[in-house]
Image: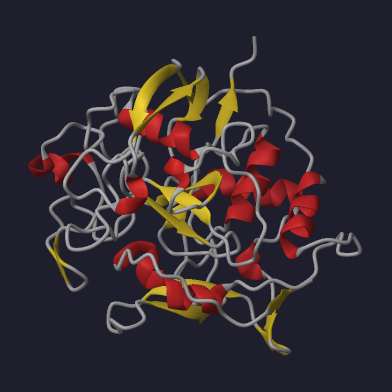
Length: 347
């Protein structure tokens, strides 16, 4: 299996992922990941991984909507509506969302652990990979504030159980959002749970709670941000004022929910969406399938992440804005990226 994306490529891209918010991409060397159980299936790395995920059996209670909120459908104006909005958030345009079940919180460590225990699934960060014929151990990307040129570094054996690498753990953090999970890991969990990842259109809609005039999910007053979201206040990346009481991740439900009753749709961790990322997505007239950009043609492509994280700052990405959008390659695990799931309302 071959692909032109993975952890070392993201080391180059990570400044743009959360911090620098630049639009230029750089390509990297070819990579090979440890074969999945069904690696005899022909196709691209992406196709083979999705094939593996398709074999995951849904949990016994997968029809349950426990821990989810049913939100009404509606039509709204999607896209940038503030001076901080970036080029990839335009043009503003009308979108319609159907009635939907949404996880009221980000998927937690406890929930993800149950998935792993019941399926035996091995996350992307726990698999070996190969670049230009040289094999590398499992691992993921961890934030390093002491190297401003490369804020993200690859750490051997960093994964969802030890998000910052060996010596770290998630003991006593069952109610924290799971991180260091790739887009593929999120897809696998959703398959097991009888759910799916939200589309980008859906995420912005339920983050705004249907109100397309909101700059932030609590309103338009930035001075209230620390009361409503876990993000970085101060001079990034060293001087964190901790006005929100959390220097890093926060347990889910640490802040009040939005008007739809959903927690942490802004801040805490970036959340994976179904869509393949296009900077000009809002001006594309064709390409969507089932309400999102499904095609994944090149290994250089990325998937959309939404909502911002505990590392977002006024100095950089301002990812806590309702229209803010970013991206990452689907096989990348990061210390500030998780997900939540949705379920279609059956009639």
